[in-house]
Length: 349
Image (cartoon, rainbow, N blue to C red; front, side, top):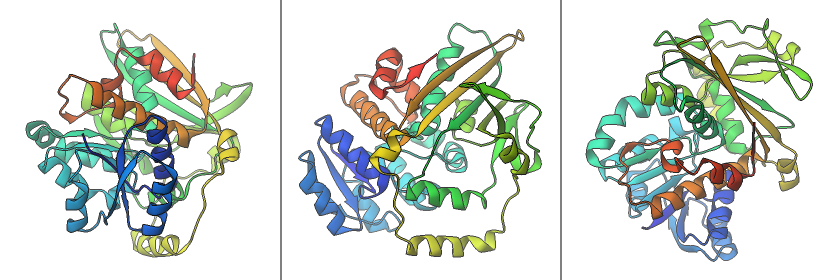
């Protein structure tokens, strides 16, 4: 199968290329920056071809879809991925992205869940640090369980310097409505106050949850019909007390985009990534009022994302199962959970 990395010269795109090359998986690269693409091709022997293409242009998308497996690293996805995603579904391709955007994934489920299945396309959203690990943890906690009442996920970061793409998405997120699932209904988070009365102890320190809507919310609702799902960021008490969930004025959004594109931001260095530790906590409450928790710890979220992509692509290449429709990372790695976590270099408690 022919593989292409879209947005290969971006921060995470480069790490994806690095990891695919390390795994001796051959692939093409695409983007708009010929100089950057040539430098990548010189660096990694597994890169076969360069394709100059713009994901916002139909001709560019047609060039990209000469490949069988598309790895999309161009965000924010709710701005840049729509044309590509629609074409992927129509042409029955295999698609991965690294989106951490709840709205984008939710829109894709609503628009493409049925047509991707009937067309034989495969859509793997959020094959990244955001949501993929939580989704695997939830599935493990749900094994041999009759019914689940609620799922809550919690993210804690240390010294987290975001990549340019993540920073761009974060800036735009204040213009986008987000939600949790409560009693089977979508509830906008800007209508909900943060509850700083409850706290978590992690590594001897107290942290407080603020709403941090992630793609696992629509994915878990779609796959399992769970009636109560929320995700949170764990912060100190002062940060929690001043945090707001209000939506910004959308008329400012175009100015934010223009300003950000003009800047030449740099992401974290390799040394900085090595010091970006994190914890993920998943709490599943069952219908009988009991609950279980699982915690996962690690570091270097961006390289973990690259490894997740590499692992899932290898799985698709070797699998005899005919996947179709919206497929979650867990569905691809089911039965290999231990090997998956070891490959990523994370600790599970």
